[in-house]
Every structure is written in C-alpha cells, then in structure tokens.
Length: 117
Image (cartoon, rainbow, N blue to C red; front, side, top):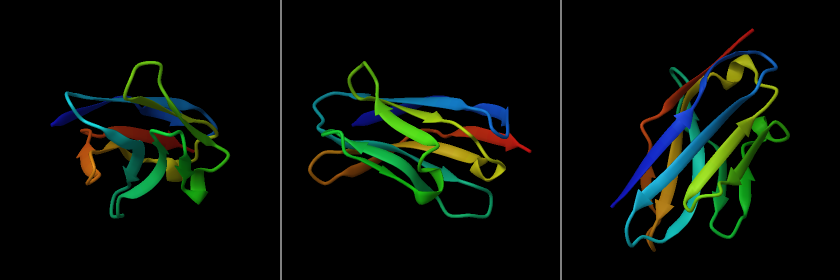
C-alpha cells in the first residue's frame, strides 16, 4: 500500500505562478511514475504532466512551455512548477503515482488551483 500526499495550490491572477508538491510513501513498492492530473467542473480528469522513475517526462499540449515537472530531492517526491497561469488552468489538481508491475494507480486528495483573469 502507498499513500500519496499533495501540497501547494491556491489562488493567483492570470500570468502568475504556483508550485505543487507531492510525495508517495509506503514500504516495499516499486514506483513507475508520478504525475499530475486535473479536473475542472463538468470536465473529465486529464493528464497535465508525468515523470517516470527514469526521468522521462510527458506534458499535455496545453501546458507545454509553461509547466515543468521535476523530481524532488527526497525519494518518491515530485514537483510541478506552473508559470504563466491562465484562467483555463483552474481545476482540482490530483497527484498520481503508478506503483508496482501492474502500475496500480494511487491518488492524492486533490488540491484546488484557481486562476482569475
């Protein structure tokens, strides 16, 4: 079993920046990847950015050049630096960890990001 905990988020004006952090804890698991998804009201949850244990990154087209995902200094941690935020980035952001040979999904509780125009 693993636990995923997020921090960060909040409210900012358009053009501003926010930073999200996430950690996965537990024992005896092999982490394949960690990433961030978001869900706006009335919309499906979508991938924002992800990074594998080998360092390969993947971004949604809508955030390329504005968001950067990176591994934290502590083991099994990941950060998402969000710059040049737009109102359409407003959503609940969820941290995801894919663990084990079956890439089982573990989710954080979600954190609200609100960008005002």
